[in-house]
Length: 266
Image (tube, rainbow, N blue to C red; front, side, top):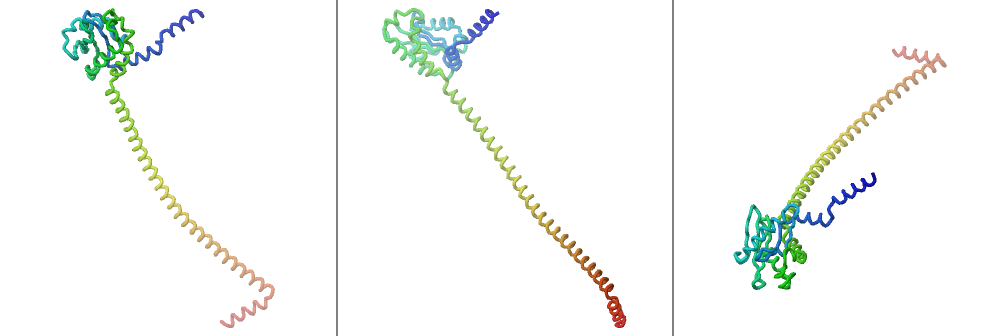
């Protein structure tokens, strides 16, 4: 059981590509260049770089480039563009070594890649790396591939990326971000207007409440005053009656004489 589990773990681990391969695959997916190679007039590809070997047949590309190298003397001066099934083979003949010309080829599907700039840099970097004429004249199939890795890497770094497309993509992201920011600002302004309206409504409600409370205060004060007057009047009347009765009970003659005086007056 443990042995089978260990095999499964090892299998899963091995299924994951190394980090440098993942980085290369990412660069290949973004590159405008598919294939780079250098060959002689005999059709021998002495150095080559397949940018995306998982999606492109290395042998098929090498054979197509070999055929172009064999007809190298028929290539016109400068840059040559040969197309086949949507693929462009940009080729340039270099006669740096007498009687032993070299053919430089860049394969691409991109319409924005400049053949003049790519092939010019390709030729220049290659001869700076392969400084000895004998290294090229005696080279066999793919014998200079390892030595030319810095050349391929520099070409891919300088011309592989579609800077125009990347710039447009960045501009699109910035445009979308700006649109989102404007939309958010409009939402914030709408929220501020709603908040301001609510504040005004609350202010009006507060004023109405204040007016109502003042009116209610005066109403309650008047009611209290009215009941106070009624109570005081009642107390006064009651006291007057009580005093009158008390006086009559203590001095009936006075009450009687008082009544008689009232009758005589009548």
